[in-house]
Length: 253
Image 1 (cartoon, one colour):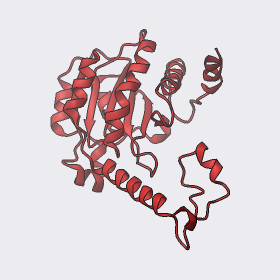
Image 2 (cartoon, helix red, strand yellow; image 1 turned 135 degrees about the vertical axis):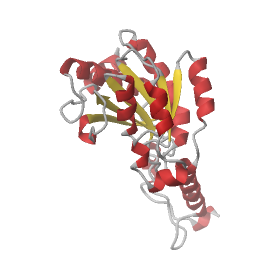
Image 3 (spheres, rainbow, N blue to C red; image 1 turned 180 degrees about the vertical axis):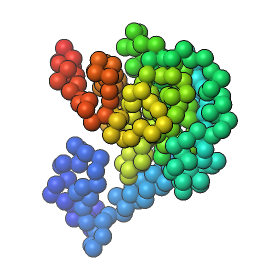
C-alpha cells in the first residue's frame, strides 16, 4: 500500500525527535500507521493519569535497595476526587499527618518524596533508578526516609518536609503525560519546606526518563542545585541552574 502514501520531504528529521512531524499523507488524511500510533499514545497518556500507584511494590523496591520508606496519602480519598479537587492533593490526610508526627527523623538535611502525581507510570519506573544514581553523591547529607505519597500534588511535599523537620524536600512526581512521554518524572526542590510555599520558591527539573533527561544527568543537576541552595539558603527563582557547563566538562572527561 506504500504506493498510495505521499512521503513528506522533512521525513529525515524524524530521527532527531519523537514529535509527530513529517508523517506523510494518504489522500486527505495521514497514513494508517501514524494514525494508529497516535491513538495508542493517547490511550497510554489516559492510562498514565488514571492508573493507581502500586505503593507496596514501590516500597519493596526501595527496601531491597537499602532505603527506609514511609507511606502517606493526601486528603483526596481516591483518584476521581484527586483529579477533581487539586487542593486536596496538596494536603495530607489526617492519618498520614499523625503518622509523620510520630516519626523521629532527627531533622534530615533532605527528604525525597516519590509521588504519583499525574503519572503513576513515571513514579514507578523512574524514581528508584534516579535515587540510585544520586545516592553515591549524598554521602555528606543526612538523608531522611523516602516517603511514598499517593494522590499527591507537588505542594504535598511542603507539608511532608515540615512534618519531618527537613531542611530540603525533593518531590519526585509523575508529570502530566504527553503523547510521546506518558512516563516522564519531574523533580521539585524546596528549601525549608512548609505549608504555604509557592511555586516561585522551588526549582524544577523535568522530563527525567531514559528517552529524555538521563538519570545521571538529572542527578548531576539536582546535586548542583542542592549544593548551591545549601550555600545560599534558598531555592526558587533566585537560584539559577548553571550546571550545564560542569556537566559538559564531565562528559568530555
